Length: 191
Image (cartoon, rainbow, N blue to C red; front, side):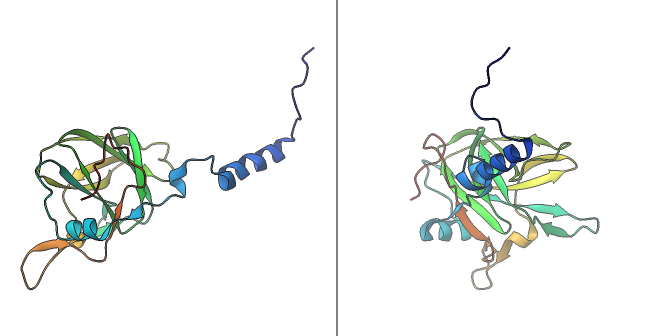
């Protein structure tokens, strides 16, 4: 006969206790409730103006993208996502946000998924990019059927042309954020 170890909770109470752990104590995935931080004024200005970084680093601007609907119109995503670089979660983005960060030139893998996790049939397809010094690379989180992927470029609603200079820049309605947690092995300090 087995000896009982500690108190036994009724099944319903155990689920409530588990739910409390997930909702209150922070033992769940921290990215569910931890939004990315607004980028510094300098990083925001550099991102909005699509400024290339110095030659010792590459700059990424990752947009919480959207989809092209049946009529061919671009529809922004309406849910928050979390972003991973080299299989390390670096932060989350809400709708209407773009994350900017600098890395050492080299090869990186990028992936994303909804904050609530991917649907049963969805698969994540990481994108690998080799970045050179002084490069500015825009990336777009995208969905292709049941595949969560990352592609290069901007959506038409994310870029505007400055009427005075004629230069393209990021739509000022997009909030520029920075990773909430990114190890120094991946993200370089902002300049």
